[in-house]
Length: 375
Image (tube, rainbow, N blue to C red):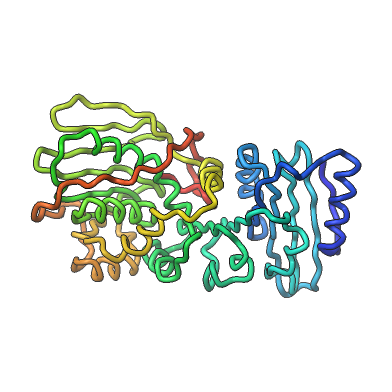
């Protein structure tokens, strides 16, 4: 059921919701949270589809604010979706024009579920100036951003690191959950040996490559080489260089990864790329701060030792050179021939924090859209 309201107010919307619930017998007792989505005009449906998918696992009230031109006259249009058109939730789309194009706590306050956690999600950009100082983020228990939407992954991660507060999270980190699970399992089963170097290969515009490298480098006390490969935004390969040989986890396609270890036959592992639906469902499973992400985006990005950044495409951004200069390197390598030489032996592998298992999601579209960077 879809009901449209033009030039309305949040008070009128709340009354209409109560009327529809009385008429159709819809209750809100099973709603576990309020999900606030701060979208852009013309790009809200992909985010709403993902939220509806996640609502089957996490029943919630979904409030979507779509920002239109501030030059137009101030008005608020709304669309209410209930029943089969809203998954296991109730959806309220707010189209703000003029002064209401800027989402504020006042705009949402009448529509928030009482005594329920609030999750704020910016699906299309990293919110300026800061996700934890804006009006909406100030009342949210969790704040979900997506650094993959930015043009310079290194600069954006540096900004997110400087302003991190517990409760912040990034879908670029969520996308590497399956990689982290597999790598942690491999090292847990392998014979103890120091990891001398970590090589992470993928698109140089992908913040997932940087975050995974920072996590592995700091946890294993090893230097990290980041290799920028041509192609879509995705992770391609992780290599752990040890004295007894290399452990390589590579995913050449969309669903199956290949694991190569010294002295063992190659193994195929089901590891499909993660779509936006799966990432949002995972983020809503926990409303407490993601402590591992917090460590990676703050101390990890600060303390990681970068051996080199190998550029095979000429697409590296100015932020990459700055990141390399700040973390032990000199300049990005001009081509694929250079590779860091293993340095001094690192400490033995100390247990990696293994993330919670994630459900196997469907494959993502080939063209990146908000929230759909491959990892």
